[in-house]
Length: 96
Image 1 (cartoon, rainbow, N blue to C red):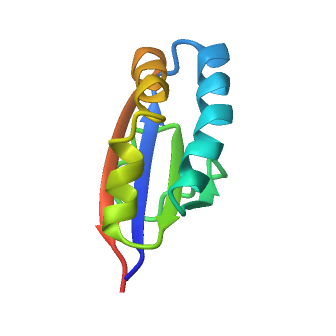
Image 2 (image 1 turned 60 degrees about the vertical axis):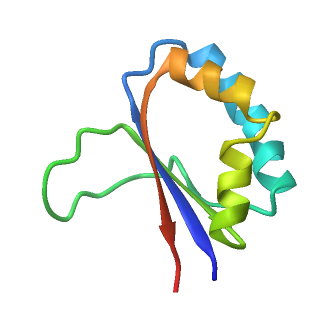
């Protein structure tokens, strides 16, 4: 069953660091069988509050692959860059 990692981001404090993060994370996601479904495109709020500036959706083959990406040694330094350069909320959702 596929799994989706959805990231909501805002409060961008270091655009150059975030560009480095995006470049590195492209390969990290692919190395765990994932792909980007949406990556910062236009967001149209249809209902409720939306405090975020950016939305990213990644698809992985299954929840274990998504967890392996998030917990990997490859992603750890990228995660630290992202956390220092922005505010992000990330969730894992199982697909159908």
